[in-house]
Amino acid sequence: METAESAMPGAIISGTLSPPALGVWQHRHVLDIDDFRKEEIELVFEIADAMAEVLTREVKQVPTLRGKTIVTMFYEASTRTRASFELAAKSLSAGTVSLDAARSSVSKGESLVDNLRTIQALGADVIIMRHPQSGAPYLATQYLDTAIINAGDGWHAHPSQALLDLYTIRRHLGDISKLRIAVIGDIMHSRVARSNIWGMSTMGATVVLCGPPTLIPRGLGEFIEHCQLSRVVVEPKLESALEGADVVMLLRLQLERQQSGLLPSIREYIQRYQLTGRRLSLAKPYALVMHPGPVNEGIEVSPEIAHGAHSVIEEQVSNGVAIRMALLYLVAGGKSR
Ligand code: CP
Image 1 (cartoon, helix red, strand yellow):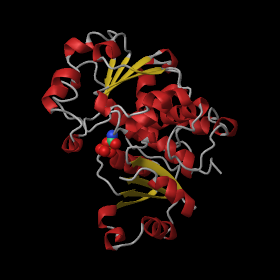
Image 2 (image 1 turned 180 degrees about the horizontal axis):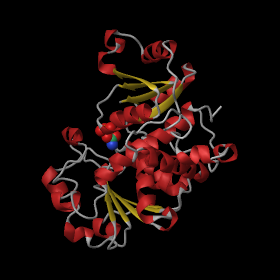
Image 3 (image 1 turned 135 degrees about the vertical axis):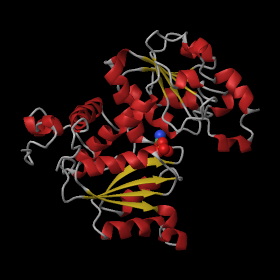
């Protein structure tokens, strides 16, 4: 019979994740990974490996966070992030409340901070929030004691997405520090790109950023220099960016931005930047094709490549549950105080 202890993720009860190992974790909140050290990212991966094992079981649930309450507050649309945080919380036996923030009292004029304080007063141990304004989760941490996980804020950051992307890369290719990763598309509006630039740099990868000049943030070169991100380069030519890449990460072309005249046309984007089989052949023979989703199939990537042998797009989604279980364990399990 399965006891509460035998149902715990193996590495967490076996002693391989002992208090000293967990001691490397320094965060009360997860707002971005720009302040994560390499050891912390590796700790998240190690716990995610244990959580991934739980997710292979017939009963995909352990009592790790029994008695804790996790609330998701999404002020912007989401499928993957919201569902996977909820599944992660349920797999750890936490109580979950999922609020469609568009229907919350914010729509009646309540401020964001008061809205979140109300959730705190109801007993939330962790609030997972997505908001269209960059910085909203940072504001929340100034007024709340509850731990906050940023599930995407404006153009700024999407830390759990970057961690699941890095985890997926590591599972396939091992040591990330040896890799050349091409990030292609709408860099300017992408919170996924921003968080990944920090994470990939911390792990020692070479990061090649490529996209239409109007979708590369002005001043990016100076920013890279200022932050001493010596392995991050901007490459205007797609073919040069793809040459020898171990990983090709595509970004969603944010079609809503088309209204603002940043691209001549979708057709031109497809002609110049879509990942096709011919273009992918410039990368390493084993190159991974990634996309955080949602995918505009036939725009950023041709259908045969999106569903082909190189694609790990669906695996990214699946890995998101284990990574988010690891983050909830670290933030709600009392290891960060
Ligand atoms: N990648 C991502 O954030 O997807 P969702 O918007 O569906 O959560």
